Image 1 (cartoon, one colour):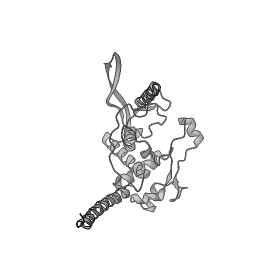
Image 2: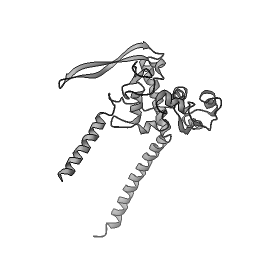
Image 3: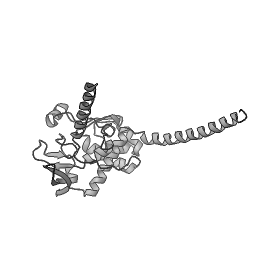
Length: 252
């Protein structure tokens, strides 16, 4: 019995240690919910195609599905398609897999359901992505020249640095239990980007909103139908309750 208890304690310790060292150095910011905002989704799709699709794929999403967020087939052809692609094609990156492994150490992941797969104890997958895309900083010790507070030692460079500019994290150093501990306090803007901080946050909100929608295009319909189903069940339960009372009222 003691061996079983000791084994369970060790297992819990390992799990707790793994969670503590999981790489989440800061709390995740709450991502804005834009899955019902067609203008934001369209802007997010534009950012995704222009910046993310160069290396990442969305192999389970077809371009013509973008008509669900208010784009016409002609708008998709004119603004979001490469010359060799068709509207019915899936969103595949143009990067060579061998070159990707040489440059980044691994093939960039498919992003079709990334907003669902990245959920964790820090929040939803959207919260993770929203924080991740806003916490890159210059780190000359890394091969790409960039690092990230949410994903330390990340292999992905900051592809949107021209929009956000170059920033440096500021830490507050204090002593805990005899050791010097650094706590993240904020950012210092080293060089400005093409967008202000507010504009960049809004753009990342649009991008994350699009990634949320892409992970489950029918989610808003599902929620609406779910509300009506619950109302129907409540009404049916009330009717069943009154019928049951009427049926048994003369039986004692």
